[in-house]
Length: 107
Image (cartoon, rainbow, N blue to C red; front, side, top):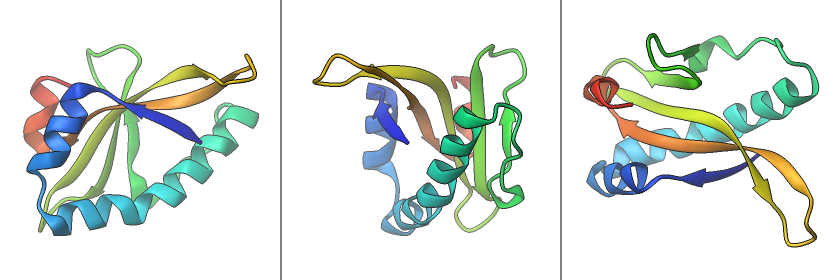
């Protein structure tokens, strides 16, 4: 799955500890694979370990939680599309925020 990041995500990323970054990077392959599956089969289940849910009162934004403790690991994201060099348009994920539970105030 292709992705892009928001400036907020980029700022959040810089503030994360090395352990938090490593934990996120470790779950990205499973998340990417699940996204690819979802594109082919909308409604396909998400791996339980990723706890992917639509955010309440934030239409079109989803949350991903891979750790509830030590460090709290959460990210928000939304579906988007990316235009490739050949002009084709493909589905992608736009990472919006990353950090702990506090990011849910401004997803």
